[in-house]
Length: 492
Length: 96
Image 1 (cartoon, chains in turn purple, red):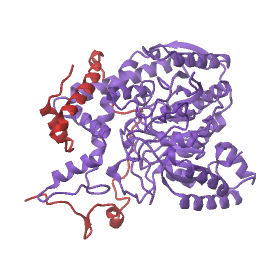
Image 2 (cartoon, chains in turn cyan, blue; image 1 turned 135 degrees about the vertical axis):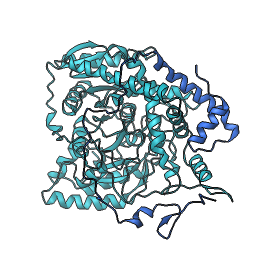
Image 3 (spheres, each protein chain N blue to C red; image 1 turned 60 degrees about the vertical axis):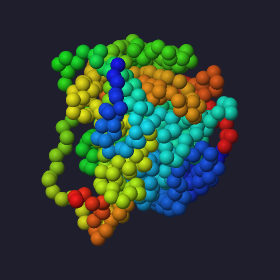
């Protein structure tokens, strides 16, 4: 077995027993990364930083001071600001930007001794579901069934491709409407979006601040539990980060869910969802029932309105957050013509720096916040959001412990296949995941099977607020029962 | 069915401070119309008496001392600027 294919738990145990070193693990990953340029997952490689940290980690392990993540090679999504390393949210407007600081989450991982291998591809400003809006070009799914190159999903597409292709042992992702869970499903890996407030957003380039959360993307549920433990925790620099103790998520993986109530929301049986997705969902339900859970039919009546509410709220927040990209303090500034003033500088800089999807969302956000439309669109969407959250609150108040749904309405599709589609068609990828962001809940994707064509499909479990430990345990049971062990065959 | 005309599209682009060439305005208007029409499903929902959601988790934001906690790093702050001179960000002339 090559070292880069180990799980985080396996690598941790091997490091502690002295069976391998972080330098060896890191070198195995760096070799795998250099051999996988066609996947376009790593867009800024940092081998020197990686080997420096690996040597430091080995010293720590030898000294007996080794947290679980010590020595573990990871990829970091380009949305996280990393000190001295390009951090450009896959946007040309941040070209050349090297922060003088480290995001809280990547800093916690660094302080725990983990090794940064480089920065990972993503949709520009995390706006997309196929990793096709990146200034770096598309990330490519390591899963392949014919001549086509498939999308790894988005926005954390590089993270998903890198973990699925064994280029790193785990990766950070962020999730505003499904950007961890949808790419995890498309690549056959695990991804958890924690409760809003569990991980600090400080130093993560903001898209929609009331929806954004960071989380781990890993090959197993146990790895997600280990890595989330190192990422989570209160941060005085993010006023929305929760001042709550971080439980030992790994210790919660007992494999026992007897008597747990699993809700199956009837509104998630949507028109046009392929039979293979419905079957996967039914199979997953049966697995949890066999494990001793009680299956309960539930209703989340406002589900249908989650996507339109999201596509008001997220662009509104984005239009405000992205106002800072003005060509003054960092990143790109357009070359100006004689006589151009500051307004021309803003307009030209933003036209050159933002890609089409980002421009579109900023303008949609500007429109829904503009005088005369604020109540009709933005306030109405926030009221609907309150109703969506209330649906979940009522389900949990009735005794439901977790909710099982499909993760995505399809398996991975071909890169370029949606190029001429209406933007709304792409938005539909998030139909099962956005509700969770709107309600601020934790949600996890677990790989649960292959479709007829041989591509991975995932199921989503949604937990109670701050109930990641219990949610991970339910996911662990589902993972074991589904027994998903398939890997993409190496073609790259 | 919401329709955004060319003038509205031009105005939105202006408000967003994004230069959109005239020849691209029809496509922009059409796309914005499509997205706004999609959003209008929200009009079906009875929101009578519902407060707009302002906070994701029901917790009170923390307060802190209103004091200086950081600073004195002018070089670091200017290090990424496209144009910085004499310790300032430089921009085109703002006032004639």
